Length: 159
Image 1 (tube, rainbow, N blue to C red):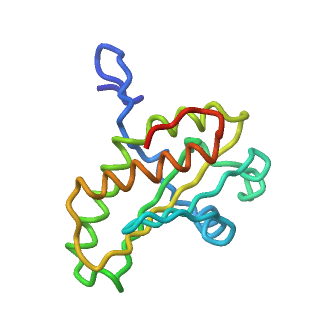
Image 2: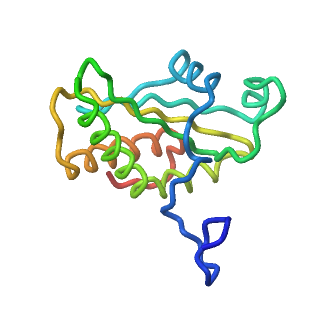
Image 3: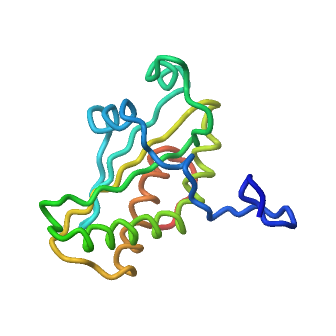
């Protein structure tokens, strides 16, 4: 595998979830929770925000950092809900995996938006118990389909 995330034969690896797709800049995270819109499908709450290229530029002092994807996400599992670190890590991994496997239609929709548009998404786990992966994935699919419909209302989306 080479540096771009492609296999030796040059075929792209579309399901890879690298650093560029992670929401990690403090200014973007704070803005997301301050100005973002929310959707809810128990046990997941999704907060999302759409930003134009000019808004992205104004969020940073020295311009937009290199290597940021147009769709970024983060996962939060509150300590208040899941007291043990192993449970928080388990649920974070399940949510991230469900997102990684089901994000491609949303990613294509975001790439079809006007140039420079970025979408940030945060998932917050709200349940007091660990749920099986199948339940988390079903809820993730529904939330991503609803977000895709909000971003591009004329595109056909199946939940």
